[in-house]
Structure formats: structure tokens, C-alpha cells
Image 1 (cartoon, rainbow, N blue to C red):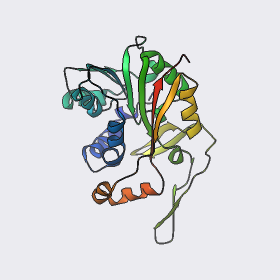
Image 2 (cartoon, rainbow, N blue to C red):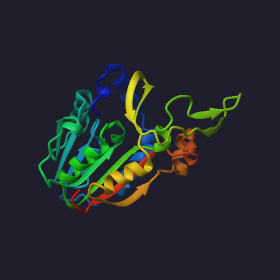
Image 3 (cartoon, helix red, strand yellow):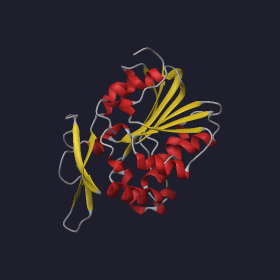
Length: 248
């Protein structure tokens, strides 16, 4: 998140166009599972980490959350969030997760959509979130699947001479470090962690795992976006739900 690529104007305009089209991987695959996994939010205080344009923050408010603190480092994102998803229960705050200071034991739920793979020090931010949550509170986050983030270079889908996708290439899996790619612009930075590292980072820092999901598209999603059927061959997303149970 420190990179704040979303304030690059070229990147942001392309990303905004992607998310404004309702037929995309987030809306058909990742967001439905995130919303299903959320606990009852009635009267709860929610921390939305990396809120983007505020869609999930507004959803939480509309589910009865007493207060939603929605943080994001991007001025572009927060401007859109305030325009599109203003709500009396939502406070939008511009800060990177790594720099945020939370009052101890303030929140009943922390939720984060596709942010953790941008975080350089995963366990440090998990400890910070742990401190911000009340005892028994829930942390729910999605991230790019380790299968997707693993390979350092080369095509990830291996094709035949006619361009048909044969299989997905996984490599460099246990080299858990920084990666760099081109996504609309050069130099987008993210971090690869193994499945074990993601889970153990929670367990070591005072959380118990409640549910682990690798979203699978249903028939309706495939009908709307046929290429999403490739998710049946390899997952794009991993979603982890954990509960604060102990001191780290």
C-alpha cells in the first residue's frame, strides 16, 4: 500500500473503468464471498482497510454498522468514495495501513478487500489490526492467491501454438518476497507469500482461523463472463476469516 499506485492518474483511470463495469472478477467472484462471510454488523464498529471507492464500506453501513472507519492511502480513491458512497455512519480517512494509528480495542470487525498482497510487512500489520480489535472480534480479508503471485517472470498461462490455455505455471513458490509487474503501468509492486505464511501469520499473532475460501464461480457468473470459468482450474483469490482469541 505504501506505493500508492492508485494516485497514478493513468493507472487510476484504467482501474476505475474496470471496476465500473459490473461484469468483473471482483463483483462476480470475490465480493459475493466477502459479503457472505461477514458477521452480523448490526450496531458494530467496523474498520475497512483499503476501502478504495467505498463500495464495501457503504455495504457495511447499510447492514446496520454503527460506525465504519474506512481507510485508504489514495486521494483519488477517497475522493470517489466520498462522492459515490457517502453515508452518515462512514468516516473516510486517508492513511496507509502501515502508518495508521488505531485506538486499542476499538473495533468489532476488520475487513479488507485485496490489500494484503501490497503490504511489505504482513505480520506487523496483522499485529496492528489485532491491537485495534476487541476480544473475540473478526478479521476478514481477501488477497491474491499465492498460486497467482508466486511466479516471478514469464507467462503464467502456458498456451499451445493456437493460443489455447493448456495449464497455469507455478514457480518460485517458496521465494517469498517482492514482485513487480505491469498492470496498466510499469512497476506495480506486490508481495508473494505462501498459503502457510498467510495462515501462520494470523495464528502467531493472536488469531484463530474460522474459515478459508478459494472462491469458485457459479453458473450465473460464467454466463456473464465466460473466461471466469478458468477459475475452476486455478483460483485468483484467497479469503481468510479469523477471530481475535489471544495476545500475540
